[in-house]
Length: 112
Length: 231
Image (cartoon, rainbow over all chains, first blue to last red; front, side, top):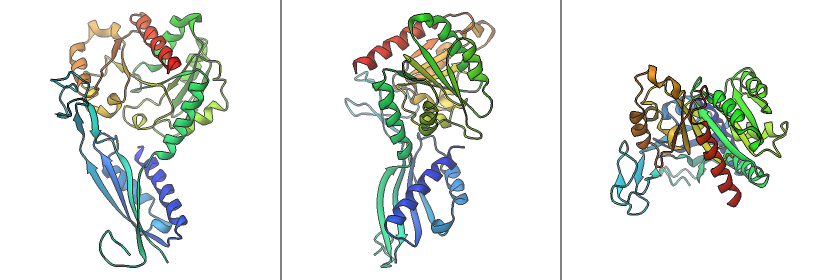
């Protein structure tokens, strides 16, 4: 389960930001996880509960999911997920335009 | 003042980050890649299921390549050095990374192993990832290419079930093709599945046992390595 190591990496980053601002607590984290990222939001959330300590003890985790979206890089026509990944008009290989994100978007923290 | 929820709490600040959670791994991978390119070493991240034929492909590669290229391998496994031992037995200098319980290799593990492994002077370095079709796909190691070994005993629908892994593949090696006469596996079905998850499906059929297709695989490696040299 790689979600645990992802959460550890996120926590390191959050603690670094918190130290830089002398935060006393983290109240909320906003994360975006794409359908083609290889990360299961439920597993990510349960891994996070194991890391909720110290400055993160009361932190709420918000996970925003994004669907996989493919398009032709030439004519920009959308190519539905599950279809052959090639543009019917241009014959160009499709490009994933969203859905592979594993992003830490926002940290809300309490400062003195 | 907290602008996000509008609670007006003056002691709350919202920090916009918008950074990849794996940014530390990505930086280490970029560092590895710089070393590899500068050293003229072509690095292959070889992934696939446990038992998919990754080590057998590397053994066949070593036999077939002969003196035409110096190869080395770093083999990741949860426990034991068995894969590294098998590769050393066919003359491939090999290091093992035992990950304990980690289901994948990351860029830091590869970087650390480079400190104890004579990788400089190699033409090809194969990083045999932990057998797993999920986790290794999301960690960049600094490789030049991702190659996924998919054996014909695994079923035609694997690419549809594990799209993240196959989307990131530069090449799929369909392994154990000598077994095709004994199976109901339809090669057209797996090619169709790959076309739905891989924008530029590149597939080679190989058998490490009979040597079928291995020359084509070597030619693919040589072509890609030459392209890296020019880049």
